[in-house]
Length: 317
Ligand SMILES: [Zn+2]
Ligand SMILES: [Zn+2]
Image 1: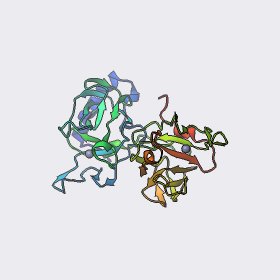
Image 2: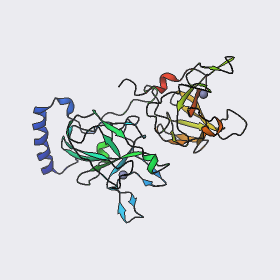
Image 3: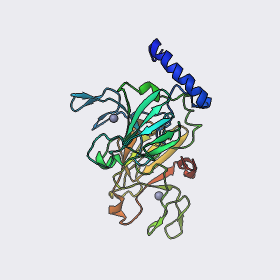
Image 4: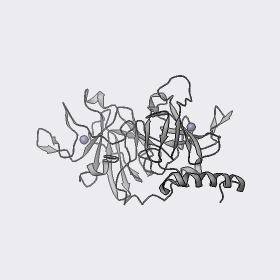
């Protein structure tokens, strides 16, 4: 299916031919690169209580339409350039100086796009496809419970959806063993260190050295949004304390070759399917039960093996 009219295509082909002289062939792509770490397929925000993420979705009670596409991105996640081009900015959307009122434009490779709700590493100069462009701003601070996302808008307000799908379909998840970020604000699944209640790594001593921690504690602020680390079927509730305290809730996910229990979270549901990176629930108020602890999701493989290597996504990139 041609994306452009014949005349436009000829003009663009000339531009591409010129760029082919200046850039090595690996910079020629029909689709954009991954924009946000943890979202390799540029998955688009569905609907939440603030609205929907697709192009043309209703805004302001139907009086306006969404002129962009919202690409799911956890707060604090690394953002990459979708194509090579020249930066300009800052691009502001809200003009009220809130925590997410920043962004940048990229023009080049035959495209022009605005990426909003991110903080770029700079506002000017050249950037290359796939290069680190900045970081996702704390959207949860402004819209608690929203599916955090980068607002991606073509400069001519046309629909960028078809450009966001990957060049090559991603490998099946069994082969991509790395899990998605499980907590908003912790894009690299940082593991709890040690505090006065204990340590968060696999095998840490428990119960005065009589037991071992057969799980990993991923840092997660009380109330933060929790995401599914991989696609699978939910079951639960899964309880750890069995005393009805404020954090005695959790869920199991089985699928994609994995089975894991996520504890101290309140899931959106206890059964049915969930997709990798989808909102799974929210972090329970751990500070109420353990004041001063490093709040965390307790993540336990169903077979009690060590999940650390699956959690260490995006490290050393
Ligand atoms: Zn948007
Ligand atoms: Zn734990």
